[in-house]
Image (cartoon, rainbow, N blue to C red; front, side, top):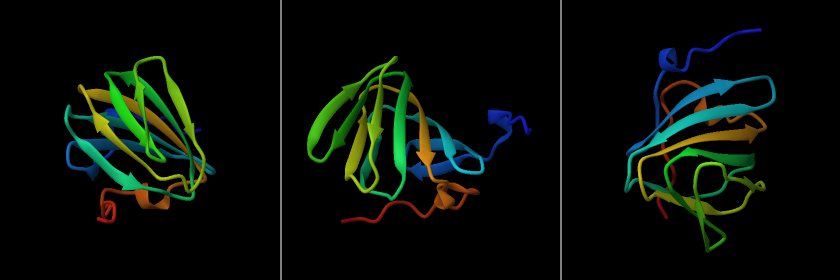
Length: 116
């Protein structure tokens, strides 16, 4: 069983001001994400079920047009194919869990979200 040292994993820029350190297992992806205050995660959807776990800071998460404020100690489950976006109200640390594996999060060359 491998042990991952997060500070040794490559930084994956998901969007400007949003950087993840990605752990990929056989059937899931765990993203340890740091978000700079004011950074925007563009609206997108994916085939993955996602659990957003806020560890630090205050995150505005908009899901299907409804705004939710997540703070440390809160988690939100996003079903597959549900449009969502986010904004960091403060500096934020999040652990996102995805199932199945996010192939687009492997390595350091994530191309970013489509602009609508």
